Picture 1: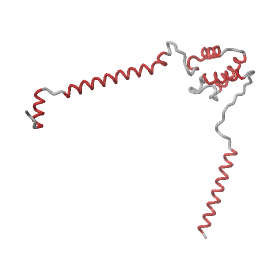
Picture 2: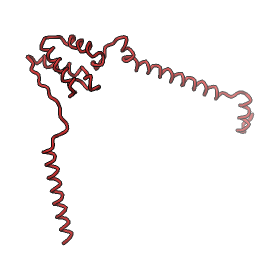
Picture 3: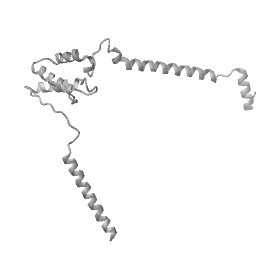
Picture 4: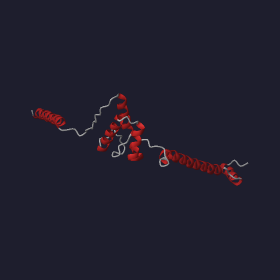
Length: 168
């Protein structure tokens, strides 16, 4: 009788736990909130331009997030600014230039090629070439050392033949 009583008690406890989890998930607010901006555009082209620009520009506050993916206040202000400029018929180049003048190269996910960003663009290739050059020199030097080590002089050859018992 006691084993069936504990079975019923476990069932009741599991039912109560399930109810508590269900109520907690329904009644407690979720922690993941996403900010949704709603902007009205005259044409679909304007809306596409807004999305493209919001994806290409980086949020200055969030480091590695685009304006469209950021929930920060700065990103919200910049999205609003982009919307205003698009509605004023500014070109994408003018909008990007405005953002560049205000925030510098950081706002661009793909920085412009300038004297200051040459190392950023070509640094990895330069380091790869330097590493390849060092690896080649090390390989060549090791090969030269191993080639010189395998050549025996006359006395070494005679000694080897004597050890092998094949002296002629």
